[in-house]
Amino acid sequence: MSAHDISLTVNGEAVREAVEPRRTLVDFLREDLGLTGSHVGCEHGVCGACTVRVDGAVVRGCLVLAVQCDGARVETIEGVSDSGAIADLQNAFEKRNALQCGYCTPGMLLAAEELLAAGGTPGREKIREHISGNYCRCTGYEAIVDAIEAVVQARGGRK
Image (cartoon, rainbow, N blue to C red; front, top):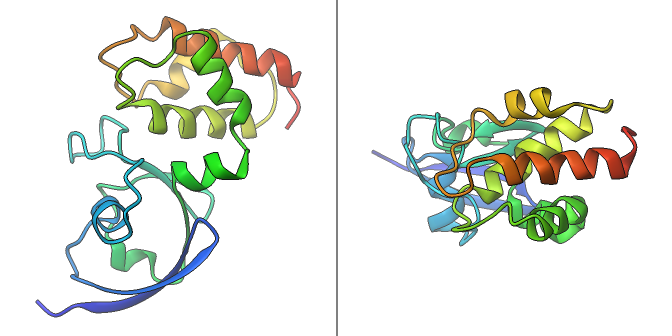
């Protein structure tokens, strides 16, 4: 197969690369750009380890092809973290021991930020429902829900 040229913006930086048509977005980010924060887990879109944002929407990087992102704006955990946009979530995760091995953490943080960006004051059940597409094998989820809830309360439900 011949490579296709794509141009996109990744974490605010213009990127132009040649990619194979079947290369997933998460593999492109990890292997071609060295952005290893998003992980490869199930490769079926169910575990959430590969979560990234494309044009503001949270997607599973293992289900999106890099060529589909030609012209898109992609944000990874590195970019969102470096911007400071999720500093309060990161601090809450650390304070409440909501991360252990860390494999699910980038996807959990992006999912949590998506929920918080919607505004309002989601309760524990809404938080659980929203992160239910992200698997965690270490924490039992209670600490994750506690951390997200603490940020909801600290932000006062503001958008």
